[in-house]
Amino acid sequence: MENAPPPMAWRYCGNQIKRWRERTGMTRDKLAAEANCSYEYVKSMETGRRRPTLHLLRVADELFGAGGLLLAAQEYLQPEKYVSYAEDFVRYEAEAIAVSSYEPLLIPGLLQTEATMRALLGNHWPPLDDETIKARIEGRLDRQKLLAKLTRSFSFVIAEGALRYPLLPPDEHGRQLEYLLEIGQQRNVAIQVLPARGPHPGLDGPIALLETQDHDQLVYEEGQVTGVLYADPNQVFTVAQRHAMILRRALAPDESAHFIRKLAEEL
Image (cartoon, rainbow, N blue to C red; front, side, top):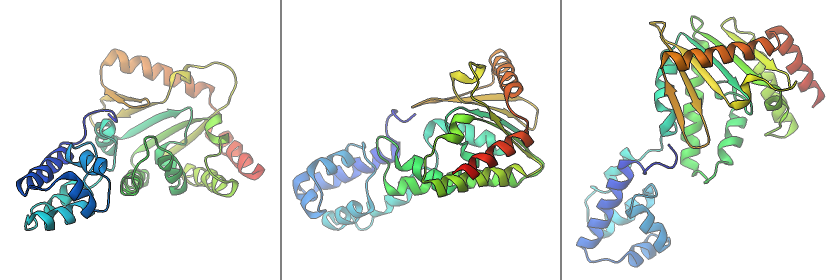
C-alpha cells in the first residue's frame, strides 16, 4: 500500500550510498553540496524514504570512486507502473476472461484518455515525481490493450457524477466522453451509466469482479491507500449480488451512449 515501507531496492541502494560515503569519510553536507541538493534530500535517499536519483548516483559514484557499482543500481530503481497494492489485481486482470466494474467517482482506468490520466496522477498527494507519473501512465496504457482482445468481455458501470465532474478543460473533457463512446462500440465492451437518482447499493465505493479462465471469481476493492483482492465465495457472492442490483438501476448501453453523447454536446 502507499503507506507501506519503501521498496527494498530504495533502502538497499540508499544504504550502499551511505556505506560508500562513510568509507571515504565524507559528510552528508559535502555530498549534498556536490550534488547541488539539500542535506535532508540526501538523508531521505540514504534512509530509503526516497528513491535515489540518477544524478545523485552519478555524483556519489564519482566522488566515492565506486567504479560504476553505485551507478549500476539505477536499473533496479525504475518507478513501478502500478501501486504495490494493485499489483495482484493487475496480474489477474490481464488473464481474466470477463471484467465487470462499477465506478462512482472516476472514469475507469481502462477507459481514460491520457489527458485524464495525467490530470489524476498530477494531482496525487503526496506529489509523484515526473518519472513515476510517466511510468504510471505507461502502465495504464498497457492495461488498455486488454480491450482489444475481443474474446474477453468488459462491463463498465459509471455513475453519472463521474461523467459530469470535469477533471479537464471542456474540450479535453469532451474528448474523454467521445472516447467512451468510441470504446463502447466494441462488441466485447458494455458501458452503462448509473443515473443520479436516490440511494443505491453502489454508494459504498468502487468494485471490480474478475472471472478467470477456470471460471473462478474474484473481487477487487480499492480505497484511499489500500486495495483488497479476495476470492472467498461468500464475499464474492455478496458483491456479485450488489453489482447485479447496480446493473438493474443503470441505463442500457444504447441509452447510456445517448446520455454520454448529450453531455458531450452540452460542453
